[in-house]
Length: 146
Image: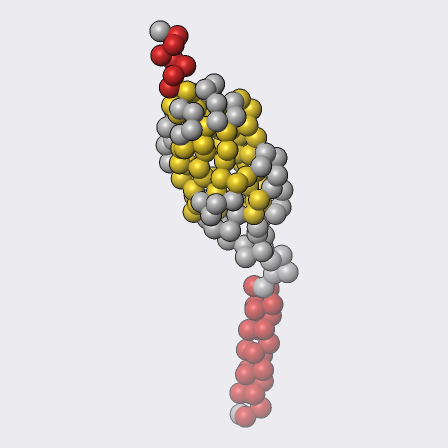
């Protein structure tokens, strides 16, 4: 009787191990690259020379990977002005600057009386890039045309 119980015990153990082996898969789905976006609050459309507009930003990530790094850069396609981070760093066009937090602010200061357009790019360490465009019209320009 002990041999029969031992046989059924070993058989049950072997069946359990086989089921466990079948349930496990070598195809682990480990994500290191997640989609992301840059969410911003509404930005003023009009600005005068010397005035600063605040751009409130939040990095929205589909998932989190601890090793992912994010950088920011910008181009000014129209007008002249200065873009700086909330930590005081002045961004120079086409240079990458590391983002150290997911919620941050940008400050754009107008240095001209023309229309101004800036393109802001956020890039992750895997090469994914998103772009946001901000356009500012000089308040004095529209008044002169009327």
